[in-house]
Length: 488
Image (cartoon, rainbow, N blue to C red; front, top):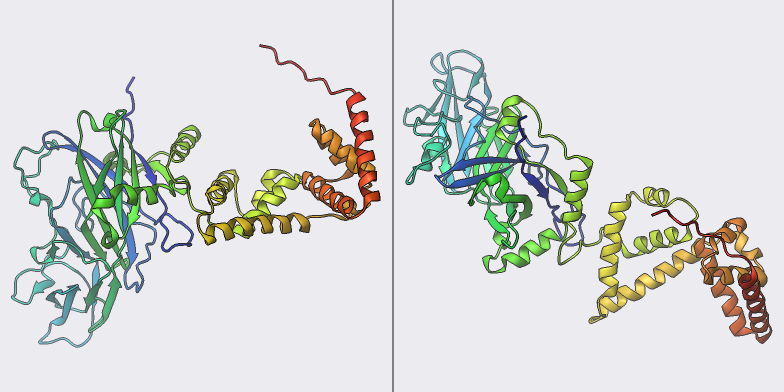
C-alpha cells in the first residue's frame, strides 16, 4: 500500500483595506515546490491576477498555475528567480496602411521610470504573435517578449549544488528584467492593442507575506518575505498575472518539518522589520475568518486536477487552530446590530440558527462577533471612547430588548410573573414560558416592569412580595422532574 504524501496546509488570512472595513481574502492561489540546495528547501509562491487597464489594483479570479515549458505560460514550479521577469504573450491585430508593403507598429513598455520600445511588423494584415520574427527592438535585434526556455544548467533531479547560479531560472528578456516592480506604480503598454493605444495598469501596493508554523514543538514560526519575481501580461485575456515567491531552508524532510503555511497581506512600505511580531499579531487576529486549503503542488497541475478539499474534520481542526491568538478578530457589524442579535437570541422564541440566518451569519460568524464584543466591553474603560462603547452597547441592548415585547406581556398578572420567577430560581421556567407563548427575554422585561411599579407604589410592592412568597411555597412543594441517569 502506498501512503499518500503529507500535503501543505495553507491558512489564508483576510485583509482589511482600511480600519473599519470588512475583512476579505484577496483572490489568489498558493503553490509549493520542495527542492534541495543541497539541504532541503521549500519555495512557496502566491499568484494573484489584475485586469489589464485597471485604474485601481483590484484582484480578480487568479489564473491557474502552470508547469513545464510553454510558449504562452511561465513555469511556476521553480525554486526562485533572482530578478523580476516581465513577460508578454498574446496576439496583436495588425491593420492599417502598410509601409513599403509591411505593416509596422511602434510599441513601448514602461514600468516606473524604465521604458523599452520595440517594433511589431507583419507582411500581411491579421493577428500575429508577440514573438520573433514579428517583434524586434529598435536596434534590430529580436525582441523575445514571452517566456524563454530554461537553460540546460537547471538540474532535473531538483538538487542544486553549492554555488549554483539561480539566474538559470530567469525566463524574461534581459531588457525586461528588473530588481523589483515599484509598488503602486503604473505598468504602461503602448501600441499593443491599436496604433498609439495606451493601456495603463496600476500595480498594487499590496503584497503577500508568509509565516511558517514548524511541526517541531518549541520552534518559533518563520517569517518569510515573498518577493515579486514574475509578471505575465496576457494580451489576449487582458490580465496581468503577478507571482510572489519566497523560500526557506528546513531541517529534515520538508513535509514533516512544516505544520501550516500562513499567508497574510501587507503594504511593504508600511512593514517595519523591528516590529515583525506586532505586524503578524494584527494579521493573525483575523485568521479565524480566513480560508483553509491544501497548497497546489506540481503533481496536481501535471495531472490537471485541483488539490483535494479538506475533509470536514480537517477544516474544523484548521479553524480551531486559528483561534489560538493573542488578540481576537475585530467586529464586522456595528455595535447596535450586535446588541440586537444578542437580544433576539436571548428571547429564545425561534431556533438560534434561524435568528443568525436572518442576519446573514452562521454559528462560527456569530462566535467571532461575540468574541470581538467581549473584548471591547471587558477591557477597562481607560479612555472616554471605551467608556462610551460600553454605555452604547448597554443602551442598544435595552432598546432592542424593549422593542421585542409582545402584546401577550401586557396581559400577564403579578401572580403569573411570581410563578415564573419562582420556577426560574429552580431552573424550571422554560415550559411555563412556552405555555404562555413567551421567550426568556419576556421574563426579564416583565420583572423589570413589575419592579418599577413596586418602586412607585407601596401597594404594588406588597402585592408583588405576597405573590412571590406564595409562588415560592408552591414551587417548593411541587415535585421536581426526575433526571434519568446515564448508564456508565
